[in-house]
Length: 563
Image 1: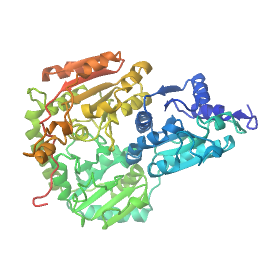
Image 2: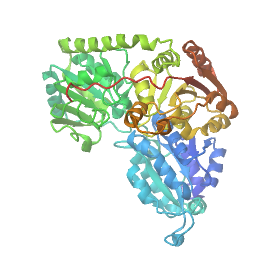
Image 3: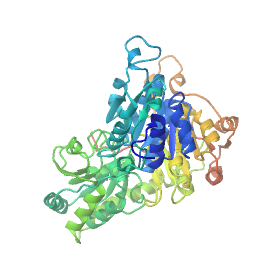
Image 4: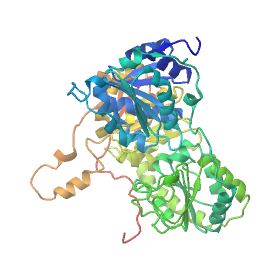
């Protein structure tokens, strides 16, 4: 085939995706059928899901593990649902490319059945959204969508294809060969810019002048694979290292310098130690309300150094900030080279390690608890033991995020932690996408029962497509995180407070069997380990339904007295 020999839009899209390394696409019918058929002939896996949000979450999980865009499709009427599914990818800084159909221009603004404007739906959750009106526009706009998704802060993009099922684009002709294209071969991070030597020296001087330095790393450091440099700098400067949930597992969580996640989903030691810092180094971390406990940890006047690819994020929350616009890994490496070997007093790092050690001792009994209903602490301890050295742990939002990020230990080497950036129910579809991106790695998904109800139907997808994950359901028959507040607010007022946040009881092991999968019901703590080992060893999705105590409280974040 020559560059001038025309191909259909469907052939161009399918062959371009295949030629540039896309292994899976996630979709809801009815859209791009010709493209999907062509993809099948090229060996690309086509994963049909049961809702647009679920396929967006699958593409999100795929992208975070593959380091390249996750691709998802939906027809015109599903565009609103697909856009809603991109919220988590936007907040979690994941490169997802969404494609939708839209009814042809002559049908617009005439009350066409099922049609609403798509641009306003995608505007808040994409970096780039464009209409593709004719097939000839597809190569140019596809390259631009890819570049936008992958460069700077990675985030979703959207192409709105002409035709209810994108048939205008699929049947139109493209006069460009669908070949390996540098724009479509970008992987995270595609570029590694480094600040100037003068900026590096200035930051190094400020770091060296600090007596109580703390490092806080986030999603950007994860996308940059900066764990090795992060730990090296921490060791050179005797600086305790905290992370956001998106940075969890960048370094071994049991390392002497590791103090856990900071913010409002934090175990107590991290916030206390960050609060005591006289300088905070933020590395690829957005300084939003979650990682700073609503901008109280560290206090607003705390001096900071901030490394970020996005210059608009530097100093966004802390005005006394020295900014370094650059790739976290490369910038940390430059700092390490500039600082050289130093002999720092370990007093503050030793104090931080002592605080963490004391807190670990205070949780030891709960982690080994033999109580029934089962304490989630014990479930965390068993998952720590069950997760393989190169395993992937996927946590949902809310209490699932707090339990999994505070009490499950990670080796900081081969293991990966993916967390929901805020969308309840995200974890199971995302775990399926993660498994598609890394078929040889084992995936454990932590979902609450409140979360799994959102996308329970994707059990059928897992069975049909042979996607093997271990789905652990923390089943307490309700919304555990909010349950005490519901009870407190109800007080002595008449009415049944259970109507606000309790449901079930449901045996999800039975539900799994209805979908043709294996299910294991766990009601005793000493059954958890064997159930997890059996599930992880399986080559199919296995549901491990753990009956837990809704009255157990996850670790509470620390705030200074009187705050």
